Length: 308
Image 1 (cartoon, rainbow, N blue to C red):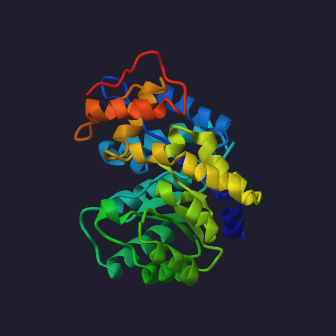
Image 2: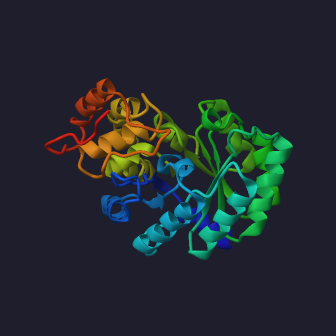
């Protein structure tokens, strides 16, 4: 029953919030609080931190815990909380996922380990160990473009069958045939989220539970409304929003996420546009393009704080 309730609650736009930094590179917790409150006020259905958009590879393990703890306190159960707890290191993943459970997260988002390219057999053992270590729901995060490994449908289906608390997957996978087969093999009640902006609407059409879209950092209300409109049966409204946001989605991924996103948030006056090396802001040419596109969607700050 516990996981059935979670499946009903964890739907819609789960915003993957950026980790804001000060000019010194330290974490800007005050701005993180402001961003989370803005998301909730704008209609975002749930909050995630320390996923790809939150630059987890640029954070120490303890910084990731600090971001999770602070975010949980700010959210204060107003919406579900789904922090990213995955890592290329198995023990670190176990540690972070257990920490997420301790602080009261509603689920943990656990990425396919990156760089080391484990086999499907190894992936099964990794995710089963993570799921067995906690009682909170687990949402697996499959993003082969950044991990160099695709979690195959048969592996995901076996994990779903063997682990009661593995209840969904975030698919940042351009193979739409693969995505369709997830629900065919895991069951129509398995939670399928889009991690690719141009697939947020199409995934709803095949039975998806929502989306975890970086663009929600810029237009949280509109990204949430795609789901709301679909859930209410307003297909045209959902389609209109899908196409309306396409130019913004395109420009936000002309450099590696979250570099364009942080530049854009800086232009909006929402954050100091700072990333930790080896990540950096986009070229000035791309920043100019971002500003031009962004001006059609949101109000910009008088000056552009982002610099190349």
